[in-house]
Image (cartoon, rainbow, N blue to C red):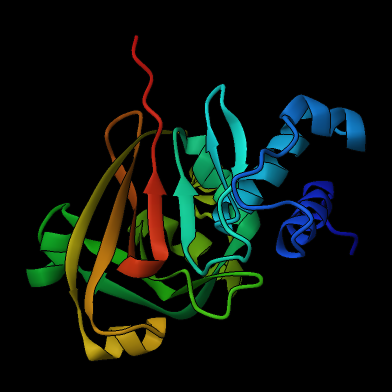
Amino acid sequence: MKPHRYKQIAKALGERITSGAVSVGDSLPTEAALCKRYRVSRYTAREALRQLREAGLITRRPRAGSTVAAASASSVFSLPVSSAADLFRYASDTRFIVARRDRIRATGDTLAAIGGRRGQEWIRLSGVRRKAGLATPVCLITVYLHSALAGLAKRIPRSAGVIYPLVEKELGVRIARIDQRIEAVPLGASEADSLKCKAGFGLRVRRYYYDATDRLLEISDSLHAAERFAYEMRLRRD
């Protein structure tokens, strides 16, 4: 399969940086210049630069362009999110490898983690999320699906992207709201071993997906190695 054009451009620019042809502190061509040079759309140029930023090779600031930040790629995974569409794009670069599927009832610690009603049945998918080119997992992940999605849960492939668009299609609804909570949590030896990092602290990201009637349809619970994960958010003033 032929790689996406933005990945080809990111690879070419990355090789110029790692070879020393472009030095740390130098500016990269603007999006407009990349569009002209490679005859691609603004979206493609932006995605190429995003790949370089996620690899830790460049920094980007509004109206200031892109600056080379390092001569070699880092293992830090950066997730810039400003809309639900950003979460969907996340699927093109990472895959949810499903290791286990089962049914649970919300009680005790599980009830505290996912909310909802005590005793309510949920379908649980657990595994790891990986990104091509990274030897270490992006995170450990557990996804909880409303019991109305039992049929969908059986059809989700072992290697999946973002789940919520599948939920929308299955029920014929729209995810109208996504609530998110990020917190530092202890990282035990078993979890650290699965993440291939040192025990200590991790970052837990929980997202709660609601339809227009405020029905909770999905919860995702991701656990990251703190030293390998950066979460970026851009807020605009009205």
